[in-house]
Image (cartoon, rainbow, N blue to C red; front, side, top):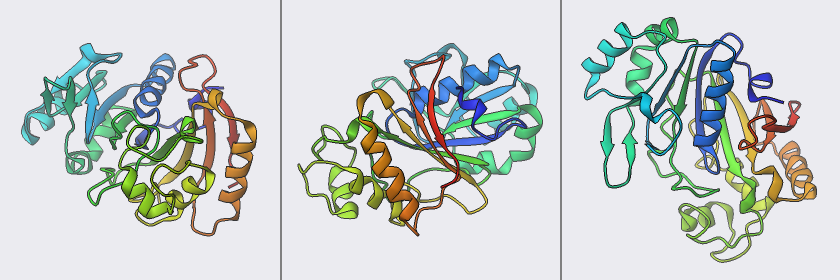
Amino acid sequence: MKLTNVLPLRGGGILSLVGAGGKTTTLLTLAEELLAAGSKVLITTTTKLSTDMQYNNKIILVRDEHEFFQWISQNQGTLAILANNVIIEEKKIVGIPPLWLEKYEKLLREGWQTILVEADGSRGKSLKANLDHEPQIPGCSDIILVIIGMDILGKPLNHQFAHRAELISRISGTRINDIIDTFTIIKLLEDSAGLLKGIAKNQHCFLLLNKWDVNHSEHYDQLFELIAESKNISLDGIIVTQVEDKNHPVKKVILDV
């Protein structure tokens, strides 16, 4: 099953990706599916994005708000990755402010059916915690994908495997170097400063559990059960994925959460 078969994107929209464990791969998989279906797609980031990826020949740098406005006015429908700057040493592009997307929302929606936004950073880890200024979700987003790399289960909570391990420990109660389990994830989902931070009630929110091939079904079953029992987790659905499997990225869907 494709991601576009599950997500409410048939009429287009603005979709932001947050969390850790496959954001960029998910973004690019979505872009491929949408382009194959004939959709006009624009890609951007409000944080940082690696230049070592598909479509990197489509990167357009807009140095300020005026250039941003000019480009989206004159290039409607053009596939591009919009950014504000490039960090040469890290081979990354620097994102545009969420305010620009919010301010020119009408123009963006007129020019492109779907705008995909990587709105969070995780330094390549499979689990993260947010600082005060994170995530950088544009308020005009229709859909939020919260991503967790399920290969994190069974790993020790430290900087080798998790982004901001001390903060994850503070929120979840899992001690540094203790094993990360489903209860660690639940605490991060339930806490107001955790993985669902910054998501508005009028935005569709889907939890995407990626890297399906590296963990056992009982871990998923336990996580599903804990989410269903929680009164502090509000989701439109849970999607279990292996996004590197381009032909069949979606492995399981639970919409009645």
